[in-house]
Image 1 (cartoon, helix red, strand yellow):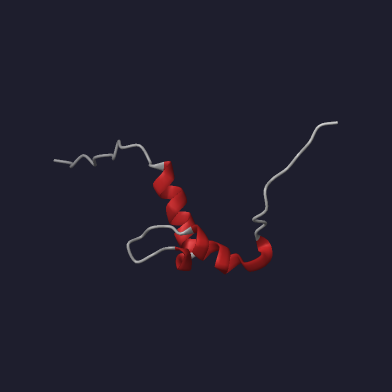
Image 2 (image 1 turned 90 degrees about the vertical axis):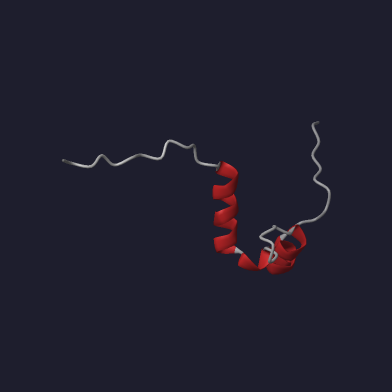
Amino acid sequence: MTRIEKINLNSMSITEYQKQKLKELFPEAFTEGNKFEWDRLKLTLGEAIDTGKERFGMN
């Protein structure tokens, strides 16, 4: 008798998927408790981040 393979019907967690991608690119931005820290990412990227207020206007 042939055994039927079961398919996982759970939806993919987009948040977890994105977090995993960030961890692959910037593992130093995560704590040992697997929490993401923006300050660590800012230190990693150095001057590539503009921390000023975003402004725009319409004339």
